[in-house]
Image (cartoon, rainbow, N blue to C red; front, side, top):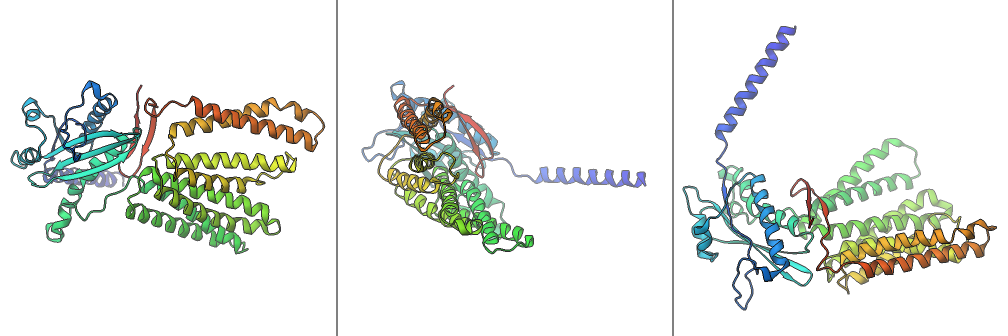
Length: 449
């Protein structure tokens, strides 16, 4: 028996080695990419301003261009392409359209030619890629508007959508490939917000399935897991379709996810507070209704936003609304030992509505919002610590209100200081760790160190 197992294992290893050799011999030659240096401005100005290599007087544009060059060089090689670094002769040929097309036809098989350009417009950055496929005579142009923090991530997404669409179409048999699809015109790009919204949609769908099981007032556990599976699948599928249909960016997907999650939490708290007789069942229905309402507010905020920091606005609105609602309810009732859900639902509702109004009317710097949240949280702790002597006296409505008043005052003062001490958007360069799911797997760390 051991000999038979050894023979079978040896044959399996031999077959696997032969298959690997055959696959390697049939593998196509890697395509090469001529990556030109990043230029500025983007080259679509009606005034005809010539693009050029960033100069020292361009300031932050030059620093961002150097970062982008390093990021794109690594991304091209990691994506399975052979990177071609331009020499002095290549750089002297310029970046006119005819020159890019001629470079793409160079060599026996041709090569990709990629010319990235960036420009700054206020707090936004414009990223423009001009690419020519090997042997083609048409230019593919992709334009994205993003923030300085998201610039490297958006560049990676744009690079993959420009270069890998053709590679994915090449794997389809020639007789079933549509001519238009082979040029990449029919392949739907994967948006950067797909996986973010899919995770939130799956979680909300699973909660909706659980709510159905709880509100049915049945103890049959055999219904629980099928409802969770169906709800999560439907939620994730709907989120993926929505993200692809409306080309949602990661920022917008996070905003919708935060609004939906906050609405669910607020509805659940409201159901526990206003339906005491049927709390065990109705609070789940309230939670589902609150999630739908939060999603509706998120859609309004995202579609009418005047700035890029929509997710940060909804996060700040949720945090301050929950904190203010809970403390405000205890200030009115004069009871610190009130139920946890008291005032929480109303505060989150007010915070979401306020965040929607703010996102659609004012362009707020996300760095200031983060500082505001941090300052408000620390201020609340300092105010509560300063008011601790009130808790040493005999419990009464007066002492409880005094404690809550000090906590609210600390929250307001801390939030104001956090907003005032926040760095300006032009100088803020934090270290950021970003998980890239879907478009580019892995974790990237970028910023000024």
